[in-house]
Image (tube, rainbow, N blue to C red; front, top):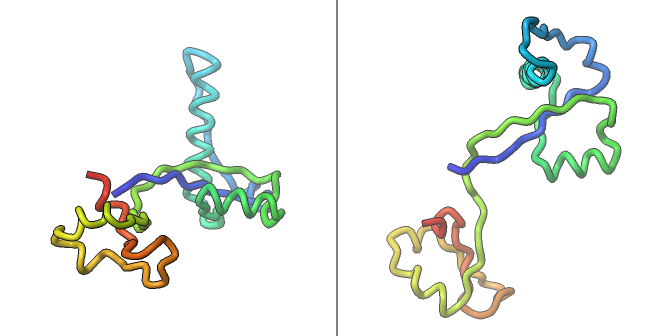
Length: 128
């Protein structure tokens, strides 16, 4: 499993619903701000109206003004399946053809977009 950062966005209409407490008794002002951010992030992540985005999708939504710049965001790292593929061309793909997973998981580039005998190989298989 790979890790990916997701952005949780909570629009300005729901900000009054956020209820989080900032504990007192900090050694420094920096500790107070860090704790305040952590508790606010937790409240955003747990809010039923927060929307989950990948970084790319968040940037697109923000640039197209689908989401407001007045909302709050929180970040969370999550484990995700790596379902990407990498194109491996001939003759390099020949080294992978003897692998037990090759026949079931490798996909031949039948339209020859990347040359003859190029294959789409699951990226997770190349990370060894």
